[in-house]
Image 1 (cartoon, rainbow over the protein chains, first blue to last red):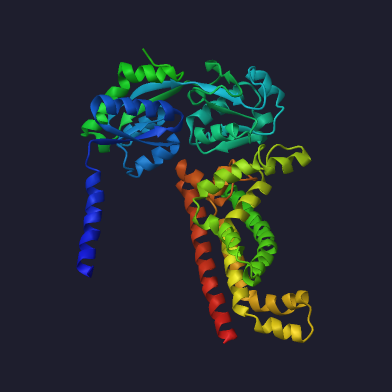
Image 2 (image 1 turned 135 degrees about the horizontal axis):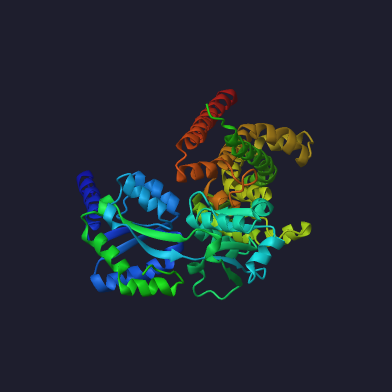
Length: 249
Length: 227
């Protein structure tokens, strides 16, 4: 093979990469707690509409930073309402597209201790490590800290926190039993029977309203708009509720 | 100017981690490199391959295995139970172990090369002069290999300072205990504290520059001295 055909092959290869992005796709940044329902919804979405939703999972705070630096996402499913609101305010998202797709539930979970009475378990403090998501970047972490403060045990427990980078990592710390217990999203415990759990009463933290928003990149994109419409629809709603989230009427 | 004192704990912790890590690594890696360089056994290359795995494995794979190994189901949990703890994850010791595993190849490789480069002649000469193998190792091999050992130490230290993936997965980001520079930078970026992120990241940049420059100078100096 001579140099010229090598160059041609190389160029064709790159054109192939560029071309492959042209199908009807939407890139959705999904808050880690919503991983499983988002997968189910995307599968159904593809089946019903033929569009493909490519899901990217992470901490809402990290996504927001990326979005403000022109990350290639068209839709943002946050774990809070604050960041989508800011995205609109700062001109990165389409204002009228914002809506609450789910209201999250916080749970205390352990594979080592009995936390069915979570209040008692937290007040007694008979553990060395309590996993939470990083409260600065993950809304479930913020809710966990609010709960701990509402129970009046923040000062006692502060030294025992281990912070997961997202709620997924908090889950993983508890699941691997490296932390005796931790605050996770109830949705993550869907289908899991191991260990004991305590559903955190909603008066202990401000509601975890999870908002979705269409980003400017996807403003004129059919697949992205279709995905958000689908997320509002009855089929997606049934999936979302099956994971323990509630939805506004 | 707003106080920057809160930036100091991660920097100090990183330096402590890298110092403890590299000292331990030199103790572990030198005999290992010696054995790899001198042994005639065919299967030593299998060991060499295992030692080098962290170079190729994604830090997440490494971090995941180390997290499991440190935990209640692994050897780390067994060790921790000696002092009544359940896991070595989220501890300084756990970080040291994780960083040693990741940095091992960067330390073993240059030291092994240095030992190999010595060849048989100087050691044979030492044996002729009735030096015991132990004495020959200390008085002949080690001094001759010192540039390689120095390179290994600098690279290993830098590797630990720059470790992000493994530390993120096993650390738990505890201020003062497992929150090192790389994870602190990540945090600051995620929460849009650009100023803090900039200062720490800029420090890392300068550090990396100094490390690479000193590596080049070490090699140059010993190359001319050895000639």
